[in-house]
Image (cartoon, rainbow, N blue to C red; front, side, top):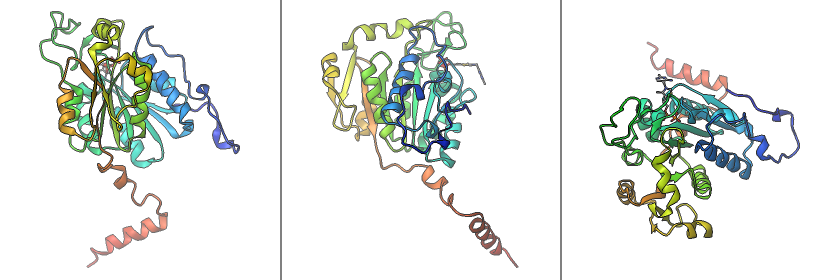
Length: 317
Ligand SMILES: Cc1ncc(C[n+]2csc(CCOP(=O)(O)OP(=O)(O)O)c2C)c(N)n1
């Protein structure tokens, strides 16, 4: 776990947190990498919501994007490749009071971490999961990822990826107990911020796919979309991402979509042109695993021992 800048435990007066209170080390990502934009959105959300740094934990696996926790001065856990989600679940299972933010790449989540992904969605523990989807393994220098488009030339497929990519939203919307699914893009700070705010508000696991530029290896993939907003379809609804006048002006293509409609959400997840962004699905009534795992946590040692003895007494002959 990373440390905090200040020992707030000693502080008894009301606190106002500035951006500096959340900023960690200087980010080592390449210039133009979309990860910077996501980091800056999260810094701003923490500041705007005045979340005490000691109550926030950033958790990640391995990859460029997984360096995320180093750049926050909250608690953090830079885990093993593909294992961000079980670490985050362990934290939430015992410390439901903490605000958990997970950073995971398309390789980290959709490839090596895919088993954990299915179960994390089903466990539906209250956390924000940000899928940094740059369609490639960035850190290990351009290998094909499960979300690489067919034909993408990489170090592992120099003649081009053979198979069609996994669609992370389509898959997530098919997992049992899914409760929040959204998509945003790193190059629109307004939409990125507003989507992550809604994800953070949601009680349950919020899965947010962030189309993320990797200028080094896959910069060209999102270039057209970045330059031409007409390639995107802005999902609008009173329970969706709030659309302020600037967003409204930016996107010509808009669609009113009720995020409680999972069937329509699945159809939209399958749509490629224009690409929908916004909240696909939202359901606050799904059970959350921490509602069960935290039962009895406030019992005293004596109460726990008495309970254990009572259970063992059932087997007395
Ligand atoms: C068990 C294990 N297997 C493989 C690796 C090598 N490895 C490190 S990062 C990575 C892929 C990262 O890609 P992605 O999750 O998409 O993140 P990005 O770097 O693009 O942000 C791989 C294969 C590892 N660290 N551990």
